[in-house]
Image (tube, rainbow, N blue to C red; front, side, top):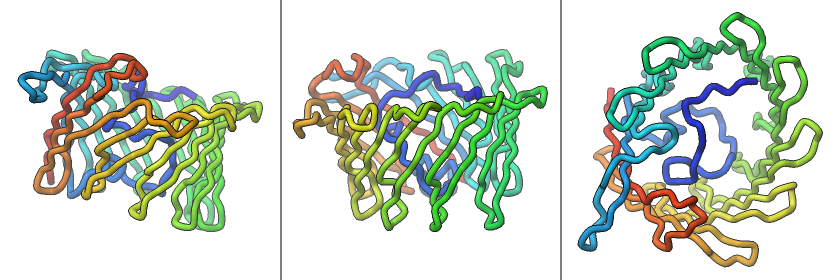
Length: 294
C-alpha cells in the first residue's frame, strides 16, 4: 500500500507528538490540539539565533517537507487542504481531501508545484452492526486496489489490532494496542508480517490524559529510549527529557510558548540547551503561527 505524504520524514519536536498511541477518533483540529473553530493554520519555521542574551528568529529552515505549511479545515474540523511552501513562499506540494457523510476521508489528491495532479487516492470503508469501522480500502486512480487496513476492537470499542495489507492481499505489518481503564493506550506493539516484533512502546499518563513517560523497545524487550514530558497549565509541552536505561537524562529540549486569546500557541521557541548531537545537529528553531477562525 502506498502512503501518500508530502512529509518525507518526521523529527521529534514540539510540532510532532512523539509516540504512536492511538486515541479515539478525533477530527483533524483536535489532533492538532487546536481550540475554537479554527479555519486555517499557517506555520513558518525559523532558525533560533542567540544575540545579546536573547533568542530571535533567523533565516527560514525546512521542517517536515517545507519552510512553511498551511492547513485549511472545514466547519467539522477536518482538513480540506494541506500545503507546504519553499523558502521563497511558493508552494512545493499540496494535498486536497474530500469526505463522506460520516466525515471519513474518501479522496486524497496530491498536486505538483505546477498545479498538475501527481497522485490520486480513493478510500472506501466497511462498518460493523454497531457502526464501528472494521475495514478501510485504498484504491489507485484507475480503481485498482492499493491495499487495505482491517481493525479489531475490544468490548469497550477500543481498537486493539490493526492489520495492513498490500494490494495483492498479503499482510504488510500490524499493530496491537492495550488500554487502561480510562481508554488511554498503555502499550503499542508493531509487528512485521512474519510476526516478529519491530518496536514496542509503553506509555504513562498524568491525570489530564497527557503522556508523561514513553519508553521505546526494539524487538519487544531491548531498551531504546525513554521520553519524559513536562507540560504547562494549558496542557502544552514545555520540556522533553531523553533518558537512558539507567534512568539518567542525557538530552533535553525546552519550549517557550506564546498564546493567542483562544489559548492556541502562536509562537514556540524550541531549544537544545546542551547541543546534543543525538538530535542530528538540526537547528534550534522558532515557529510562528497565523491562525484564522470561522
